[in-house]
Length: 280
Image 1: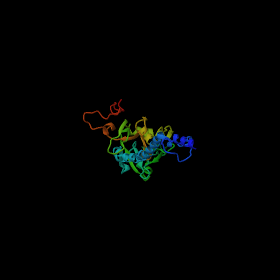
Image 2 (image 1 turned 45 degrees about the vertical axis):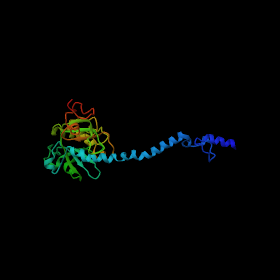
Image 3 (image 1 turned 90 degrees about the horizontal axis):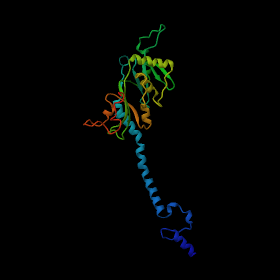
Image 4 (image 1 turned 30 degrees about the vertical axis):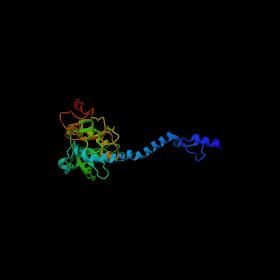
């Protein structure tokens, strides 16, 4: 009996008499001496820090969407259409925004339908909008396109395609990674290329989303393909995007979102001091 007590005292690193008869090799690791206490302390610290690590992640998506709406949307190359007869022309890139789910539909305005003699009708409502409908290019009358209970806007060219990393708060500036100037070819050439692509079915998207936007950019710029995607509003509202692709009107994004001009050439990022994209 005494021998057993001495063995129990010898195996109890705390110096206290054992209160149970659990064999030493069956004790949980966290009960076994200073090493076990250190493991228990680290486990307790990790459990305490988990909410502080996860809480910012839960707020990243709403912060991204707020930045897109408050900052980037302010610089978007969009012109609201009030009257299609005076504001929309052949070759225009138009977009229909839906507010309830943040979705959008991009299309290119082409000439009207032909009569029996092969002549195009002059009625403005006979203008067609060629767009990607999910599986192929589709043509829709402009009047029907305009009546889809959405907000119709026109995209102004030239403008910038930009790939950037958004900050955590709207008071900070985004980090511009890449930018490219999108310049449009002639309106007639845009309409002709769009109609030809719709009739032949030769065009197919390469982006994983926003194929209708990819089609419009390809037609407006003469088939020039971007090396990155421009993300639609619905994607920005439902998925974390690092980096995010967007379009900016007016000034070059690296200058618009860069540091104030006080003798410096821009931010410390490698793309700010690179040659102007689109001109190399």
